[in-house]
Image (cartoon, rainbow, N blue to C red):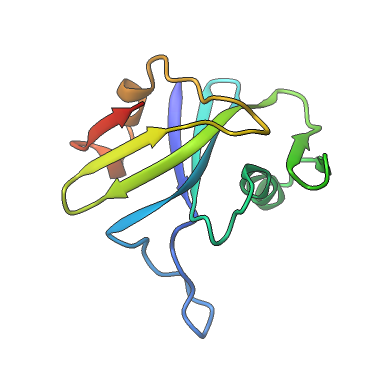
Amino acid sequence: MKMVLINYSGLRDPEGAKTSPPDKGSGKFVQIRKSEIEYLVFSPKELAPYHAHIVERFCIERGIRGAHEVEGKRFSIHDPGWTVVGGGKYEIDQEHRYIRLYDDSVAYGKFDSKGLKEKIHTIIELRGFEVRIE
């Protein structure tokens, strides 16, 4: 299964241009699958108070149908084949080259850690990183 990293941690400058993610960051993430592609989608807490906000943004950017449920705390995907596997929290440190995934999502449950470390090592941006999964 191919793994793709999407990181919403890049900030926007006053003119709206996207900048690179910071060297150190933390926030929430969701794990989304469709067919043979798995996405790890990171977002700082400031942009995503709930995991649902990450799923919603991911879907809007790709034209995937879905809707909010449970007072905005869950965004359900309505397009067949797409699955929100789970979520959690992350810490990433570019300088010390490590990434830590932990905790779970109230709305979507625990992320699937089976084989995740190996899949993360296939992502170009994270090659050579120490991966901590708790």
